Image (cartoon, rainbow, N blue to C red; front, side, top):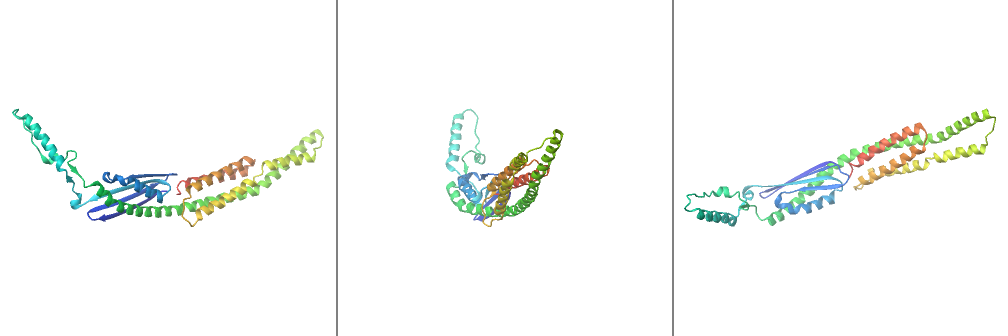
Length: 294
């Protein structure tokens, strides 16, 4: 499910901010983006997200801004002196050649290892409780946004369930008529053929043939299972207890589609087949929405 959450906090001269975004995904996939000097917290924040969220492509982005003296980098005196001594050694080698080396300390600050941030362990220790708190707050906001979207999705799934139920009622009412019409057509055809040949048909054989057709076209079992699936569908989306139902909905929709296909294959009737097409369309809509539900 899609969602967005953010939180920020100022601690002394350090400003922390966390931004959380979620996109649809049938599985959970987390991406944690942290400043380089606190990368060690990535696993902890990833674990926090996995405890709170079970579905979606989730991206957590953290920014840390330093102000005042806290924003200044430390000069590594030992590294800078090493560079200077090396340049002095080169200058000594060039003595007498008429060439000289000009040392610009401001440019030397850009050399690797000269400027460095404060102790990394201290930074991580200071950032850990703050980022954990902010990530949890961002999750709360994201979940609230997801819940608002979930209410809309639940309403659409209910509507699709009612559409399916209505078509199933029409199919159930039509099924006995299909057998009766088959009986009438078969009797009429047999009477027409026998009249030409001046023969009579055994009623037992006729009844047996109609019984075989009725057994082959019987869809009561499939209709009963579909009713059970619709009942479970309503229970899932109406449950008061917050729990992940996305994958269960996806599986239930697959089972409903299987039953609809069986009804269509058993029923040699245009009206029932049209209703089955409408049922399968509503089930596909539920399957699509199930991908957006945690």
